[in-house]
Length: 390
Image (tube, rainbow, N blue to C red):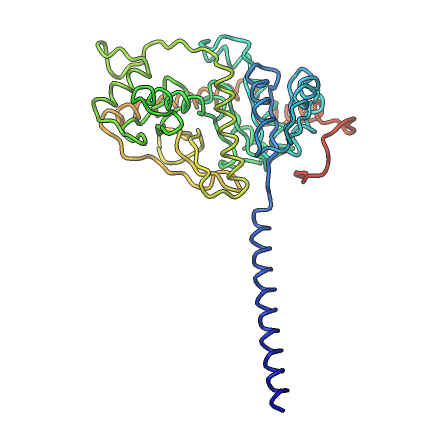
């Protein structure tokens, strides 16, 4: 009897241990399922530009990216075939102009690049007249057929093009402020390199927080909060004037004429770094922090602002806001917010000029859908991924 009782107790203990092990396996399986995504798919719009080709090369070597979809008004099939010779796991797909649906529908991140056909220092009106309708077409297609993807705007001036994209998404009823991002990665890279050279440090270890706008003339670098070595008030004042090319003898608050030039390879490198941060956030990394031009209600004077944000599985999950500023930085910040408001009004006026009213914009969206998304498509990317239904 005693042996039987002992055996029964042993059996009960074994069942309890088996139940505990099974319960732990269920919990671990649920945790793995929570971050099931192990890689990201990126669509590059405007891939035939110099920046687009350099970015496609970098994405092909990015271990966080599994598939790259290249699209432009010209065919990108030859560029994709060339990049696929590289011995990396990333697969590159090229598409013609009519296959925009196939380039967008499986993408987790959509990147729109500029044409680079006009001078970088051209007036805003000339840039909008050249690229405005193209921006609206791409934004309409992304809102209709890839509404869950994160849209990254890299078309200069971002301070005008991002409000246009946001309004297009809003009118198509797929607006999510945490999934529409303006790139300031090139400015971030330049400022980090500038401060590292000034302090004789490794640029990879230097970070300068940014605030304000996404262009050189309206960005506010916070050298007083730089890492690892912050700068004093007077030294920070001089560095801001040096970067913004301000004539301190005339007025310390007025920016002189800045000569803008395209830097395609540096821009592609900076965009690839931003996309890597977004991809880490989509894959569940809790420290996917970057600087971006996003929709915010932190300031009443403008609706979009450059701040430090945290990316998650659903886009932007946290905005770190506006830190404490010095008196000089606060004066610059007030002027920058007013200028951002003027550029948002310029974007609104451009949309009204090309659409006229809500009905005309809807008809334009229908025309775009009929042009790019026919009923039958001859070639598409592999269907082994989730297709976002609208």
